[in-house]
Length: 254
Figure (tube, one colour):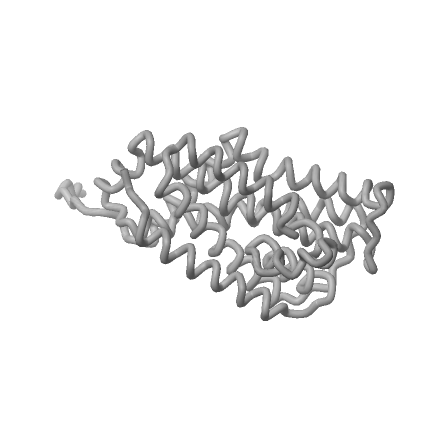
């Protein structure tokens, strides 16, 4: 028996590098207390508080409150992870030179972005499971349109991830932290992500064209009425294209 000790220098195959990067991105998010707060804790608190408090504060819907709040909270969870968490994490990675050092590794830029996208998808699967279980315990009874829901998740993730990377690529880390949290709070309160656009009166015509309102309404159509909201998906696709172009033109890697 002989051992082959011939050196074989070289990078791992591209798919393996992307999978490894996606796993590391997901683990880093889950180990960060602030990221976990944004990804899971706040959406669950909004869901439980909204369902139990809607009647007491005079908010009434044509469907049970849990059927309206759960798709909105799923949209909020996507916004939390794809925009706020991604922007803050990437901003500090730029500050501490992490991305610069990754640039010296065999992992190409496309692999780094694919890994970040994969990490987001892993976290979103966890969010759907947790929020879905909490919603079911509260009596959620969805009428699912699978294509509409899948496209809403995909386009919403792409839109918010593009905008999050744009913010992280042009601002300093501290400014990214402040801006990402401010935008998150503004859109959660007035962006029609948790509540339908129709709840905002005349302003609802404006919120329907925000990425938050388009994502929330698309998921409500897909999970309440069982229909695909093509207009809302088109709005998300436009935001995704805009975020991608802005990021490609302005992102600084160090």
